[in-house]
Amino acid sequence: MPKKLIKRYLPHPDIIKGNKSLQRFLGHRIHDPNLWHLNRRSVSMAFFVGVFCAFIPIPFQMVVAAFLAFIFRCNLPISVVLVWITNPLTMPAIFYFTYKIGCYLLNTPVLELEMEFTTEWISKQFANIWQPLYFGSIISGILLGLVSYLLVRLYWRWHVTKSWLHRKKKRQPNQHDKN
Image (tube, rainbow, N blue to C red; front, side, top):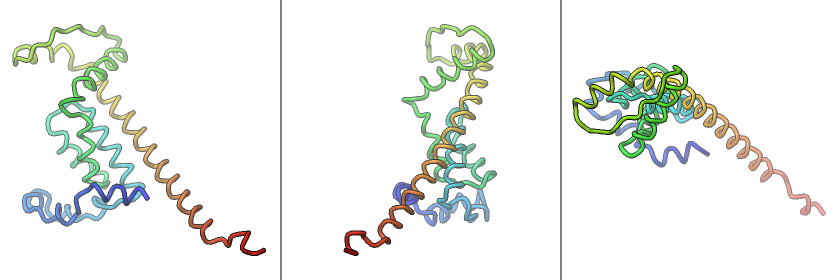
């Protein structure tokens, strides 16, 4: 079952709930069982939240994902972990892709920029690209979040149906045993 696979990689909820700094910050809300459930609704919504937040170019994406997990009452660890889709290796490609999508949707030309990693260059160029970057990021985050939500729900449904059929087949007496 997908639940067993997911449980294998997630930390135990008691370890996270026992964290004193999280308890001070979140209070009794950390004990909401919906944040820790591994069911089709909770996991699929966590995928939507995590993928959406991964595509938004902001600092502290994990904090935003955790906040949205509280609002939507979905699995907190999965929401936060999925933010790491954008990591130092994938971030340039993902955000360039979302920038190009934003330019296409806003009907603005894609700027060919010479890369320089200085504060001046970043602040100057960011003023030129922020609108298509954020627009493309939000649209991509919503669309890919929805796709991941639907895929998780479909996979979960398929897996449960397959398990039921397998159990049903095991319970039925073998036709050859009757003869």
